[in-house]
Length: 319
Ligand code: 8YV
Image (cartoon, rainbow, N blue to C red; front, side):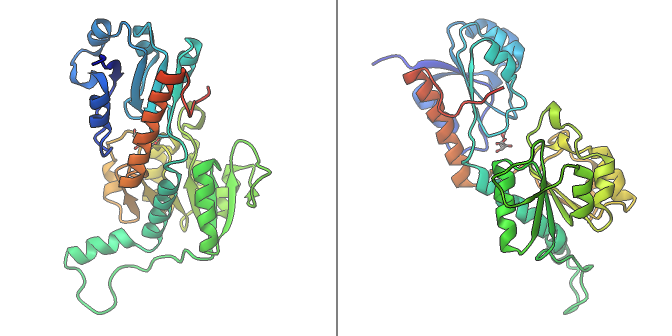
């Protein structure tokens, strides 16, 4: 029997059906999260390791890359990779892969779930019924807002942004977008100014990448432009929204509603958001369906296997 290939796994994939088991079955896994002193663990076990598996939550810093002198491939579970130092990896000739496409539909579906939940007060109504508040046939909770036929603004028209836009047709919505560059291959109007897009939109969905380039892109000015009748939806990354400004805008009535799957300091959620009935809160579950999480796991493992077999990952990330 040949010895299993030794790899390093940064964190436990609790949100994936069988990733931990499949990795442990096929590889000799150094389970980094089990070591109280990661630096010491990397120094002790790092030599000879050429593959590291991680995710956006676990990340991979330049220090970790440096501590693994033989590293050649970082295979991440998930599409976002802002916590992986891709520049440092590529400088060292280390390939990085993520899991694009397989989660696009589920994340787009959740954006719509959030939009409908906020506008039609679905989560609020659910809390109300459970708490025994429904005493009459009608006259229950405050009226919501119509979604069909309204104006949908999308920030970031990548794969997920486009899937969200496409679903807008089914709701007869007018769709516009803002992104770094105008695209010539989409049927949606481009707004060069994010503030103008927010002022126009009834619903503004954040679907950009995370990282320093988009940090606090959704500023107080953008939120106030969206206005007292507007709704912000975020299925991208928490730090894209200035969360303190969001709390303030909601408290002052300068923004109508927020529906959020991601937060600036996950898993911390500001109490002011929890206390606000105009806010819908989810625990970062955009990709969290059995089917998608399994597909993400498959693609991460395909990248790992392809690197070992051919020297190249299948879905590489560029800097
Ligand atoms: C994952 C995500 O849950 O793919 C992403 O970028 O945000 C989610 O699908 C997350 O990466 C877990 O770290």
